[in-house]
Length: 369
Image (cartoon, rainbow, N blue to C red):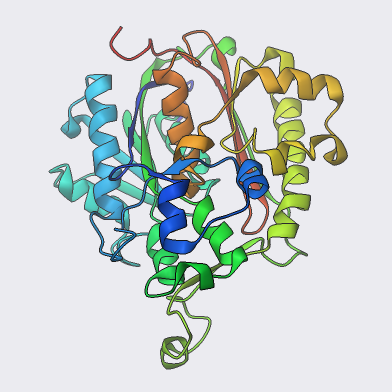
């Protein structure tokens, strides 16, 4: 353990990658049938990007290739060469292979012979957890420059739901799953400054918890694991499948969010009024925000929060590990996250009803400035 004062850790830049052309709701209606207008309004996803061709199911890229594309943009914006990176931390629930981990393929594609690689197997909360892992290792002097990536490819699980079927014969609950998710990658470059340069104004606070220990999973990805003999898995209708507890996530998800935000505010000593940008990827979704009051968030705090949420769900869909870095990249690129802003990253994950939060002061000027 380092006996020196913590180094100040800064985010230098972000990057993003969305595969292919956007698919709007009319595009999906043609391959998997339509959703009622009120349901579309509730999930608020109008466009998403998929790594698979929705007509054929063909893979047009891979998880690690999306991660590398986002990383290259972040590195270019930061003015950092790939060989300056000494730590890569990747979060994903959809790697190219179970082993080697996806981060080693990013390493290979960036041309790095030797670099520290850590991988977090998670959904939405994973990128925030990965950022904190990297931040701590930079702060204590273990490494100096880190690349953190959240990446997800959900469409390979979605295509088998409708491929080869009459779109109007796809079950409504399956359509809802298909319309909800998108693929993509977001990347963040972090660098440590000199020893003792950390200051109170930039104090970074982290918290995470799983609240679903006594509940059935809100989201379950079945297949490819060790829950059953492989021969038994191969006899299933679909080798891999994604299952959602939609009523459970709608009712319990907001409680996870409210617990998470109260935890973060208590640990940081901040109030919601002190937060300039709350990066919460699904924070404005009707099914979610409509339950804030029931979950314990005051009307006053809801009013404050509504003004500083940074999210891009409408344009990218629910993107798992990529959600927070994609929303952060959009916020920074569009000027909603600016130097001097107090930023709260807050991810909510339905799998076991987890949250992960991180607060810090933003320092990087807008891209191109």
